[in-house]
Length: 245
Image (cartoon, rainbow, N blue to C red):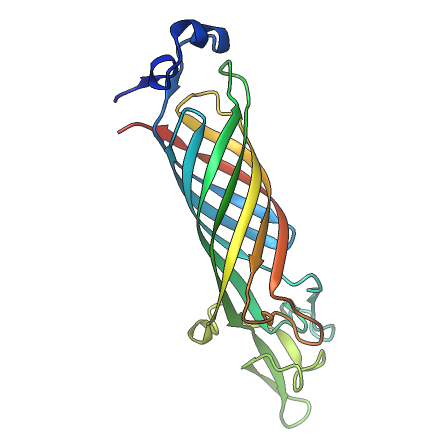
């Protein structure tokens, strides 16, 4: 493995190096890392590849997948049946976003000692690919009293009410009816890396994501308003590895 010393790879003298770091510091050319994300309207995950441009700046290629809940989603049950399954009353579609993006990660304060924390920031832009999958529910259909049977139907806010909804159907229903919503995405974050190993990458990222779908509102809920602009604060736990090749 070819290791680059910060004192030689980026034009610093040995004297400069010794005043910043306690020991010779290895600069890795590439990194691969992933993470799990919680945001103000859901959760997601990402995988990223980084390519160093300088000792303190890298180009980042990232792929996110995240779900997006409507702020008015409330979990409900059919009160007449103890074994009924929970569902979101009024929810028309489950909404996911795929975000392939490119950006830059800047290191502002490096880890001077192994137990320290590196602090930086990053930004990224790219397309946002919205995916809506229709919601299917188990519906109670009356037969000869007092009997009823259960059928699975796509949720219809006109026909289905609290009384005849038994619960949610299986999660695989509706995949053949997915609709695409093209859009754009941008994000900005502050990064905190605390892995004690120089080649490791563990950290926390705090940031904001913005997704915009110019062709119109994304229908998530019935009986209320929807939007085509999603702004979310998020926190991500990251882990990965730096390397040379």
